[in-house]
Length: 416
Image 1 (cartoon, rainbow, N blue to C red):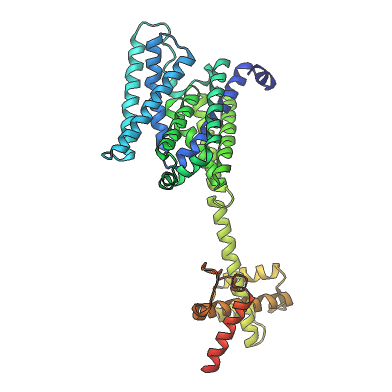
Image 2 (cartoon, rainbow, N blue to C red; image 1 turned 180 degrees about the vertical axis):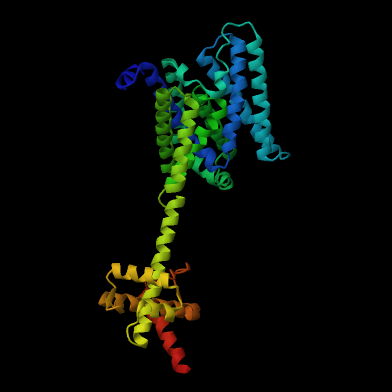
């Protein structure tokens, strides 16, 4: 880690904290995807709380506050908690959410009791163990980084090697079992990977806040992509960026590192939920507003074409009276038509340009074709069982079937 620390334009303690936060973010972000997509986010919370008594037991056994020993204790306790949850769920007597609650509360209570017992002892080494509750990134050492990097590399290697079986089990455990995959073992493996992420982050953000690092990068990545193969690296990148940003902000403001990292992660989640292309709330609202405006302009276009065929060019108010639309809506539609070169204003009288007339005729043709589809569509031998696009049936059905629909309409008109 020495060369990497030297490369960073930071003081040694800040560089160590930034690297540690990045390792935490990358590991928790990538592995947290499995918890979020399985709708088992609270499992990460339970495992983080379950690791606390392991830290205390490791200290009581060894009498030393060695980071490597405490990590082993945390990992062992986390695995015991994970297996306890799986066993309780498979017993069928307690619901999964209740199993998570039982493990979380019992292990965390045991951890608090052990912390209190250790604090009341006369051991000179016990000071600082309570930092595992909320984390103490400032206490990271270069040796801790090696341990975190080793755990992160091992867990990510497992994900890479077993990606396909994990993916199949993640989305359809029953299908995975039917194909011969050890679905239960793979589900246990996914839970075990969460234990690794918890162990990596326990020293930095603590047991209480660790669940945020498991869920926030994955939730943010889910807003940006729907492909698992892409979601995992995106979540890892978000987690790494959040960790480094939070660590540097905390260092510059003398605020606790763990909570600042979590707040940055929450801010990223909020931004992605609001602005993510295709899924963001504001992005969708903007697209819906644009769609409504486009449909209004199309409606005004058809109304104007109809009015021009019925009499002299109307004014905007006359068009509103004839169409039954609100005058304000008509004016907005006319402005859009004028901006796209479909409308010409002749001394207050409205006319369509050649482009506007062509667009109006195309719109009327599409509407007529859709009406024919509703009435005669069942008589067509459509090769594709999917419902065609009602806004452009000719493109969906093809010219032959569209012409067939028009022929059926003409036959019906001839008979009547």
